[in-house]
Image 1: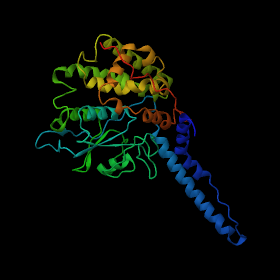
Image 2: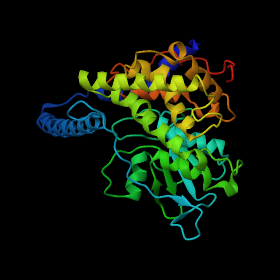
Image 3: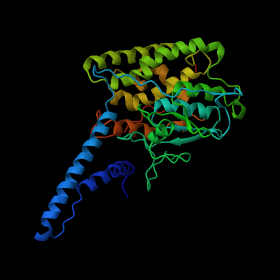
Image 4: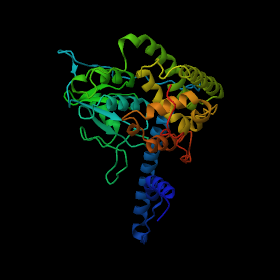
Length: 374
């Protein structure tokens, strides 16, 4: 039997192998001169058709991997679906158990926010969950194909979608944006409620308290909202989205500008956590949740893949490391972190950055190590 690390490499090769096998399979038949002309004609037709199909596929594949604008800067698309789930009696989307379904990727930091709040609030039996495959290809996020059984993938048992894009087109047949996660789906009206993570976590936080295992617990308490909002603003720009602006930059100027912002932001967070247990003093809040999903990916992915090489959490930021371990060791958090999906997604999907699809071995610092609490 192969060692475990070689089994993993073999599995990755097999994931990509069918395309190459079908491309290079050659069938040889004896052809008589009587049918040679007809065969040649058919071959020419098929060759032309195949060429067009390849060109169309290449065009689609090229467009989905064009993240930066013409000036080399990455600008994140604004989410398109922005309705709200509410407890109001006349609400368009009223909070009800079993009515809503959450589509996520374990790899995506934005979806990870929603996964965490759903877990902390104990809403696993209230809001369903489907998780896509880690490999992002020309048609976007997908679920397991027939015959596949990828650990972590939870196929769509609500709409039976093969691709996440199917959900978007079901909600809006003329949709022209990107097919992003998370997505909150309403089974009653058969449409997308919201695909903006910062808003989804707000109504997961309170709207379903009647059925939550942690009713009354709020990660966005009213008395701390201004401080949380202020933190969220610059942390999003400099760190959450900052790593993407550095990693997807296609000019040196754009890269260096955003690279500096990332470490400017990390330095500020390090100083805050040198004095405080959590970002907002002694209270665990939404600000911590939003930052954690970036920090847990920083060393294994963003440092190398996105060229944020000015330091690591493990070796350069002791206070952030303490905070990350403290967060990770909270009940229900470790089960939301799927490092296999995280690493495989970035290193195998972003072929414009990593065309070899080789995945580094390191998972970042060991987050199970005991921490010294503030």
